[in-house]
Amino acid sequence: MEQYVIKGGVPLSGEVEIGGAKNAALAILAAAIMTDETVTIDNLPDVRDINVLLDAIAGIGAKVERIDSHTVKINGSYIDCLCVDYDSMKKIRASYYLLGALLGKYKEAEVALPGGCNIGSRPMDLHIKGFKALGANVELRNGAVAVEAKELVGTHIYLDKVSVGATINVMMAAVMADGKTTIENAAKEPHVVDVANFLNSMGANIRGAGTDVIRIVGVESLHKTDYSVIPDQIEAAATHGDILVKNVIPKHLEATSAKLLEAGCRIEEFDDAVRVSAAGPLHNTQVTTLPYPGFPTDMQPQMAVVLGIAQGTSTVTESIFENRFKYVDELTRMGADIKVESNVAIINGVDHYMSARVSAPDLRAGAALVIAGLAAEGITVIDDIHFIERGYEEFPEKLSQVGAKIEKVSTEKEIQKFTLKVS
Ligand code: EPZ
Image (cartoon, rainbow, N blue to C red):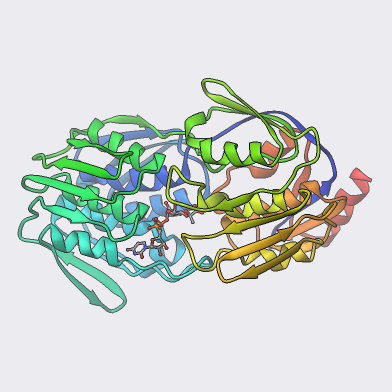
């Protein structure tokens, strides 16, 4: 197994370029099969989840041509199977976007139910409610969701909870339905907007993405397009020091920037960049995760790490997922003073983290532990980094560009070699 080994205590400074948004790219890749013409997509992040979904798309017969590590051409006319197997779903939950895409195009699909996840149960009831409202029959059989419809008819759908996945999946199922569809209480995340823009570039008629009401007028068919994925609002998480984060949309980072400002960071916004610096000591604040434009749940672990070495007592309330504090036990081993009560973490700031050997429990918690390792004095080793590499491209390389002492290793000998080198 591979690990990251980090020599912490080095304030970071310099510039780093942000890659394409993983969660926009996953949905866009699924939507790309909805035309029989060739679609070219670039600014894809070169991360495991993207490559696994491309394998799943090739697995149903679509032609997938990798132009380079950030660009792909997809042609859905070659699709010869409408079933996405459990093996793909087990590897990546976002394969469920193929349900909406295949239903929208072929009026039939079968996708294995996604397993649970390290951050809580991840139901699909709202996705299914939307498909049924459009006229699809939905059947759960052999651990899979099977959907089929003689015709899909536009309708009015109210999503009981704000759900990124359900909003995007229902939007895809509706783009070629007969007539108008309204999705109320829709998610407003930047990646929902990016998927809508992508579908509109293929000839769809979607209005209102980014607000809580999305209006869709069904069209006969979709056509080819060349599209570039938006920058990742989540990857742009900053650490101690003075970092210019380039190729971002500052508006997408507003909730995170506001909280870093409250905690004592300095934030400077430019057209496509944000500069974050933490000259003086940080202090406590209160954070509650909410659907966009609220504070993003995918930034919750990273913010908790920053508050763990801020002066005073902070609270972090996780209102989206029911089990997103698994990193707290690992952070406690690095000296954090955090108590979790129900969905609230009460964080008493400590002077500094201590280096330790820790394990990444999931993607964003793993990134948070890297931030803690960068702040801790001494050598920190992080196991299970496959979680981190699902969503962060060239993480050690990007952090090294801004002065971090971090390497990917796979043996105890390499850890010792790194330790000697940086001592
Ligand atoms: C997407 O997950 C992201 N994943 C998650 O990022 C992100 O944390 C989440 O949106 C919230 O922003 C991808 O885009 C691939 P939801 P998704 O549907 O769509 C409940 C990461 O780290 N719900 O918005 O699965 C659900 O249980 C990942 O990149 C239902 O009850 O999230 C949750 O409590 C982690 N029924 C809430 O809604 C449903 O049918 C929000 O979930 C669907 C969701």
